[in-house]
Image (tube, rainbow, N blue to C red; front, side, top):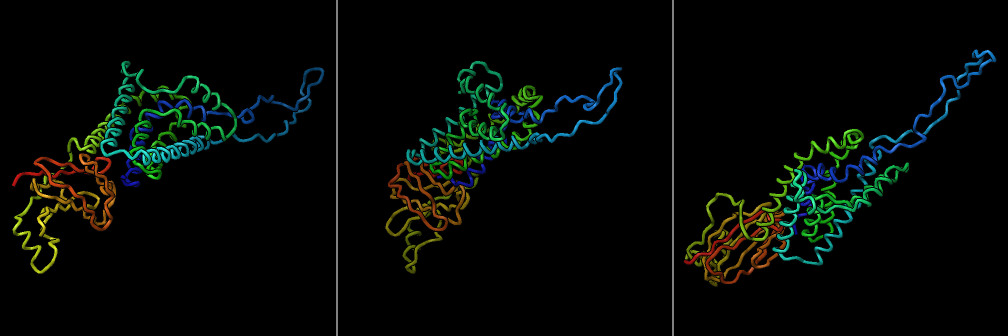
Length: 384
């Protein structure tokens, strides 16, 4: 399971860069309705200039006493309905994220199933970006709420109650934009109610700044502003989509794109390793990341901090092999270690060793990654 904090920060960035404008294009009408509500009591009533004046039979004004002032309730400030709208939206999406995390936990998807969901989320973002660019061929493929549902919410937005924007915000969970649907898939892959809630809460908080600004601007220029944002939003959504698809491909173990250029850690001489293993009766803790122990088992040691060190190994094929995950103040997504080809999923100890039996490997490349495909590496097994 990926780090809850990592997922939260990533979702805030997604909401800030792509979610705000894209969701505003879908939910902007609801936001505008919530913000532009005006109470009839607050509207200025037409009052005669000389309300208390009495005219004589000749038409002259006899009394110019001003009409008594009446206290009218103040119209809510624009940020009040905006804040209520966003509060409702945050509550409903956080709850949804927790439920999606519970679903993912019950489903217990394999590393490659999670990877497929990430790729699906990225492809959904691509469709949404093309829709923003005005590609008519994809318009009918985009999931949209029924028109009657949107009209119902817009009519509700015209009521006077301050509670109404909150209810509208709660209902936006039923009117998702393309990026929201993609983030929901990521919440499922988190496999945890806490992490799922963090994914959706972070996304909504990321969209909040733009929604707050649009709360002012949508009164007069919602359509014009939405049109100007469409292309820019599409570009950002495409960038996020590409990052998500690449992460999914890496999480599935089908390819590795972000390896460092450092030399691979290679297997040492078995005789030297055996001597160090037996000399003095001490375990060869510092004999290298790839070594042989006294029993003839090949030990591959991967140090896990916030990253994997090293990210490339060269090991001997045809030898019983154990992978040791050495946690060294480990954190972030790197703790959620996976080997997609073998279906291995392990949470690395923050400080300590976790052993994984890799069996006797044939020549070839074995890829590993964090659960979200952001940290990756390979072990190349070669004949001695």
